[in-house]
Image 1 (cartoon, rainbow, N blue to C red):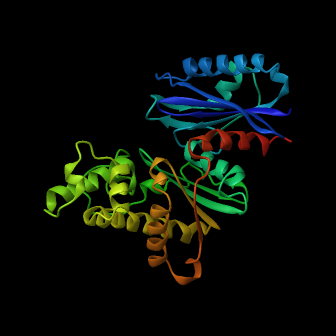
Image 2: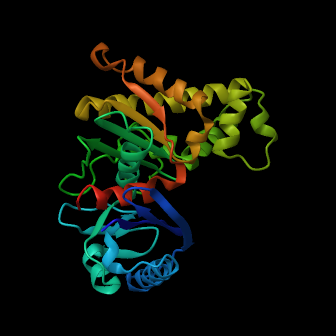
Length: 315
């Protein structure tokens, strides 16, 4: 039982990794995500890929300690995946269905952001700490809390959903979740672009942002790094939103470390420093000196976390 597979199911692709308990990641690849109203077609794709990988490596299912799966939706304590908006499924006990179809047991299921946090805790930026809060800045804003090596899921599977913390009760535009004023509306890649476009309309300040045919979050942060005054003003505003949200979250769970991940985190130390400074300005002194770090595993955090789900549960 030396091996396992880590599977990260995303809205566009499914990432798959073969792991050894002793040697770590042995192989990784991805396939397109087959969407639909129920998971069977996609699970058949995953089964085929796993069986082909086993054959290539001279392994059998009996050599597997299990399979870990990260999925884009809340996962309850009893293993129910509460819908996947980006794929089209309703509520499903994905682990049970996967075990029956793939003929491997056990199969562990977790929310993608929470599983990515476990990956960073076990193999990445959080290897030296006992607890962490991970915030992923991408298409949305995801979050995950790891306490004493375990994912904090909550009864409904939504613990750590920092992206839907209400930051502005006067916001008029609706978030994808149905609420208004969520952190995600300001600090996701799409939210950052929305904030920037709104500012470009409401002010006549000169900025390189006005010269861009296609404005992206990366271009906004790059402009801030170059010293563009308006871009700096906007990145500071976004960082203040993130700093306040992280401060509020840390009052509840008080982790040892905060990890920033997701595509926007490639802005690097510039982003990290701004968010950490905003956090310190919005939290009381007792937890002001919290460790902050950038994620190390990047797009592989999900498969590493999924593998960790298996290896921490099966000895």
